[in-house]
Length: 305
Image (cartoon, rainbow, N blue to C red; front, side, top):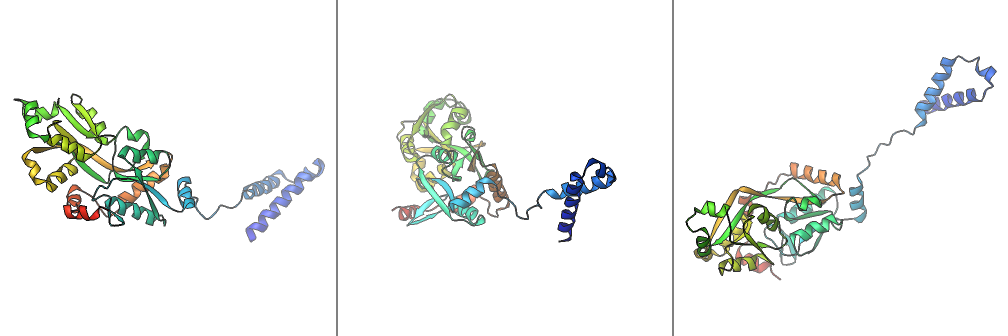
């Protein structure tokens, strides 16, 4: 109250001086006038507010009343999958943890039919985040911001033993892989379609609509091999051990597949928030933990509607 009265008194004095005739104003020492006007000017601005202002992206999410997370339509256990009428998995839990930190429910948008489409939904602003076992690639990084990786996997190949032997001829297997010249299957619109063009430029890359269709083509000898991350390749032989008679796998330990969260390019503060969330999150994923959580064949059947 005292400060407010002082401000008003200084302002009144300054205003009175400004209204005086020049002859009368000259009688007041200039130092006194400067002191009065400085006090009035310093107090003219409104006092600072005590609350903080959230970034625009958080205001937008709060006004909507939910955090929207884009996720692939097709299940990919143990990351996201339906068990009965319940959506479960590592990525689902992580999305809900972020929502809890924001005090908001999570709404999952599972309209995407490919991983690239998950990225597209986020880039168009139709979802706040993309959490869907999404590989970080240079092409996708032109459309969205990616978080730091929350899981790192190696690249891997699944090969038809007979067709690979024909392709390799007398070359050592490692050399034949690095100089891959045969037909190589990838899932259409996936990160490995991009990786194949970069890592196997001499291969004849063939896109397939699904992993199951790709594996069937390798087993039938229609293509020499298939290209995906080590988790999916190991999962295949775990679920179909008899396939090892016809197929062999190779893990490319010098090639990493880093999995991250996609954030809209116009939401840099949300991007920083997600990185901070991952940095202080207690749960740390690695392939060992993921393999242990892999549903069994009977679990997969039970989860299907």
